[in-house]
Image (cartoon, rainbow, N blue to C red):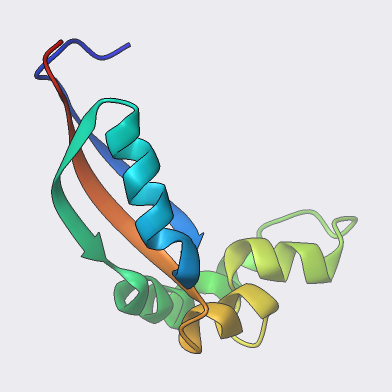
Length: 99
């Protein structure tokens, strides 16, 4: 629950072709987008530096491909989708409109 006039920060991975439709959905739910920023580049830099180390922190019985994709290890499908521009990691500051 967010009271009218309240703000929250929202981040999500989105297919590039769906970003505008997702913004329209948020607005349709009564939120105004105060700030919208594509942080994919920053996420990729972080993945380059830490994802492989994070992957080693999980138990060995986990599926390597699933974990690599979940953590966006360089070379994984998710990492490549972000690198190629097919997927965006978006950051929004949203405000709940007054009734």
